[in-house]
Length: 390
Image 1 (spheres, rainbow, N blue to C red):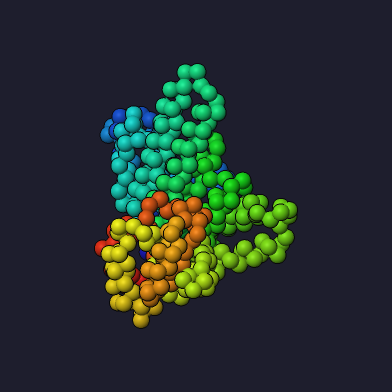
Image 2 (cartoon, rainbow, N blue to C red; image 1 turned 45 degrees about the vertical axis):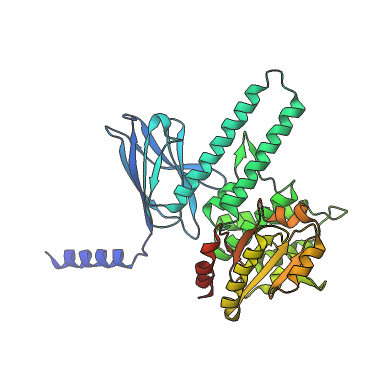
């Protein structure tokens, strides 16, 4: 090799070596019964859907895409053939495998290699189930009473929104599914409307808070944060709906500093106790009723946890919704943790804010004030508390 050629080759190698590494994700799999069809990979951006790759399927329908991984935050993609789609949530350099048959591609696909995408599939299936139920209800009204039909539809949508909160948003507000759930729509209408519903605005704020903490530089975070602020301002219960810049700034500071929907209620001595004052500790937030069959053994179990971990920075903030305040007070006075009472009982706005459907309901909050889990089984609590205290 001539000297000049050698120098050029060495420079080329050095140039490649000095280029920054670009993370990529791989999406492969099979779409059966689609021979000759074109499979598209779409990027679901904030303001548009963009085709980023495509391939003509042949034979068994095997495919493989390799693309630059999303930066700063998770992102959403979809596979599309003849109007049928598979939605995916990608957040790393993972390899995701999707297998489906074209005729039932949207409702019977398999996804491996991405927990977020598998979880997103569950959410989409729930959405499809709601659409099917709404069509069924509408078809039953041969001579529909518009008011009665609207009432039933509203009730079904409210139940679905409640399920979204319980299954996808509260357990992990910074997850792709929590974000995706906020923007779900039915027949072009958003399920959560932060511009018109105060509780919906709070839900946006809760997810925005966690996004601020986990993905502070992401475009999606900035957008969601802005939507949440405008929603809280527009649904403000103030007498004149004029919200000053100072009020908006106060809310912005609040959602940055606290990752929870705050609670402030009186304890047995009438002293107001704020949940956010416990920030810095690992908190077990518990909604319960003392005048129930489960309560005595349940509180004994909580006492065991409290005695074991209190010295390590563990706290319990227990909210009673008993209608009999005296009964609660006589029992709670002997408990070593913070126990407060909501006189609104089962009509408590806090129950609605945290989407509590049955009692007891437990949330685990880390030292930074983030809800990390909503355990359904008491035997899971010990290990999860110990892990948060590490």
